[in-house]
Length: 398
Image 1: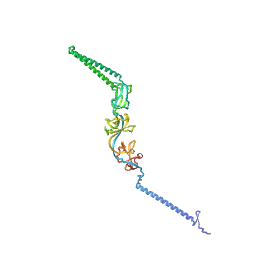
Image 2: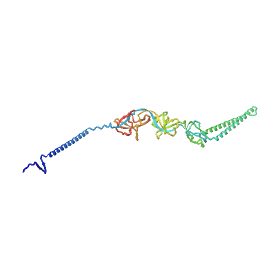
Image 3: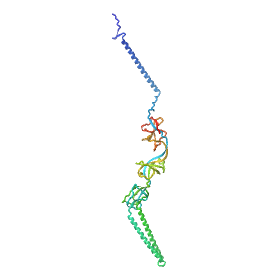
Image 4: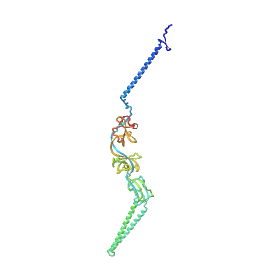
């Protein structure tokens, strides 16, 4: 029998023509093929775009990102230049301006009293040391008695001469006797004068036994005690600052010495106190120490209990006027290389600038060298900046 069943055998697979499953499978294959083609096209397009951008970047440099908006804002000032009273700061040692040593003037002896102490203010002629003079008083009394004897001899000689003069007219006494009696009278009178001079000498010596203040002033030191035996060869018993006047012996370099002259004003502040004393330079050393290359400016000061010889003090000496920039201390930096400030250049970048400091005033610190006054100087936060860093400068308000 020859039946057409529409069934075909292909390699062991049975296919029924006109089956709907074949149609579904074909559609799925076509759909997958489309998505694969689309994905490949998308990848090719992306690669092409990337290559195009790379080619554009190779042909033109990419513009740098603008970081100005991200730069930190820094307060700056433009100090300018001002006329400033010149000042020189120096240190030195306090001393008596005129130091008077007081020693034994006479022959000395045993000290019986010392009525003054170191630190007291004494007047000229005031008793400082009383010396035992019991022996000298007896010598003066003896000499006074000798004067009385000499005067008696002189009176006797005068009386003998007077009697002889009455007898010479009668011829009882020769002229030679008169001459002899006259000489005796003159010698007696001379002995009176000698005795008086010797008494005056004794009294003068006795007056010099005690020690008196040769000038008014402040007693700086006392080197004598009751019971001590002193003589003309002894060390000074007292040291007196004449008038109580003091001075500061300030050490200055050669350059600073050339900037001052005698008579300029100065302010002195002793160490350990904030009290300021006014004085003036009264002498400038004519020589420079070869070791430290410094000279001494001597600043005269009036008497004050806070000024003690040997103490340390700082002086601010006026030295005319200078025209220079001034900066607040917050703008100043320092390290092993010296003092410096940070300035902002034309590209708004931080630049380090070395400076030389001058005097310190109520308005700030004078800049001797390193700035013209037109720069933009970082006012604060310098310690957090680095040279070359980009910043946004903001001018400080007055």
